[in-house]
Amino acid sequence: MRKTHLSIVFSLIVVFSTCCLTVNQTFVNTMKTKIKILGVFGHTGKSHFDVFKPLLEELARRGHELTVISYFPRTDNAKAKEPLPNYKDVSLVTKDGIFVNVIDLQQIKHGWFRPMQELYLLKTMADYACNAGLRSSSVKKFLQSDEKFDLILTENFNTDCFLGFIHRFKAPYMALSSHQIMPWTNSDMANTDNPSYIPIVMLGLTKPLDFFSRIKNTLWLLVSKVIYEYYFRSVDQVVANEIFGPDLPKLKEIALQSQALLVNIHSSIHGSRPQLPNVIEIGGLHIPSRVNPLPKDVAEFLDSAHEGVLYFNLGSMIKMSSMPQEKLNVILKVIGSIPRKVIWKWETDELPRKLDNVMARKWLPQFDIMNHRNVKCYLGHGGLLGLSESVYVGLPMVLIPIFGDQFYNSAAAENRGAAVVVAYNDLTEETLKYALDKIFNDTSYHENAQRLSKAYRDRPATPMETAIWWTEYIGRGNGRFYFRSDSTGLSWYQHHLIDIMLVLIIVSMMFFFRLINLLLSLLRFFKRTSRSQVEEKRMLKKDN
Image (cartoon, rainbow, N blue to C red):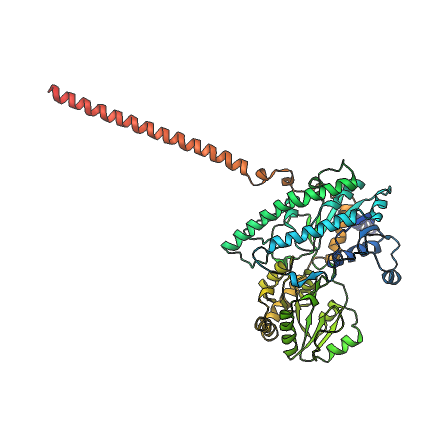
């Protein structure tokens, strides 16, 4: 009897375990499928590729086979340190080099027309990327190959000319963005971009948007979409047709086929907004999982700064030495006068003027410096990589946005109470000193930065694991069009219900006019009835 009971219990355990295993296998894919991935990154900006590079290398570490077209092939040092035989580069490097220290601050003027200047800069960079990248000998040779791919990854930014690779290799593709979603991308993905409360990436509007901000936001949103659709894309199409052949579909049609979009943002910084299920936030993807030891001279400099350190870096594209002398003098005077040490990224190892409290280097390990216990403030330009690292660490900021999405990012950090923004046009001794004093002396900025850091880091999965999962998911062929919004097939007037509104207005007007006619007819009827009654009474009176 006891043996019978034991066998029944054992059978139940086996059945229950099998059911659990079956359920688990139903919802979690445990298959380690190796996929062939083509990465196409034609933009020459180093900071953009710095976002994608960790993902590409991690995919290679996990056994996937990668071919990466970019201006940033793995260096010999990187290969020696970590050989990745399944990571193959197709180099676009030319004698013209990449976009490092190229922004001339002498040319920067922030007026009401600044967004138009931004669009012009984007177009200039797009033309260079398309012409130099697609016409390179390495790309021409690669296009003659008969390689097959399971997935194509490509950057979504300022040009669609590289979407020809999707047509050439007939593989599903997933887009990656190193910053907030561009206005035209929202249209391609049919992702909500309501200008009443979602600021456009090229503006630095502070939330909540007031009436005039909403007008400005709406106008620039429409202008940027129209310019991209009828100017950017038309030029891209000509170049792409030349390289990929006259049978290439419209680039707009290919853009609509994106099966997912990974975006280097997080709602804790930029705010909550409706997103499609295949628009995935991976903010902080580039942030390393560990802090490396600092160079000896930097470590000694920071260790001895018990009063606190200001870390100053305006990114890889801005050429600090091109700053107008008047503004440079302002920065040097204020930096030299504060009772704290400053570590400053400069194009050379020496500043124009020697400052006793400043260490200048042409390259600095930014994330490692930010994690030092004595660093108390980050002075930057609002670029998303540095700002994300500062948020991750919990470091309050003083931000001087110069171009691109820096205004948008800076406004977002200021809105969270973790930053003070100084307009470049308003950069004076008074404004810069005031901003630094606020950050160092007002504890609320440090407290807000710490709270923001906790929210930014607390996620169900790391940005890397999220990005890897979606890459493998699409690569396994599961993306298809299951997540694609049905509104991508609608024309603009259907999407905004213009046709419905016109019909309703016409029907309402017809009903209104019929109602007016009916009322007028009734009024005339009652008038005639009343008149006839009066006439009858008058006739009766006469007869009597």
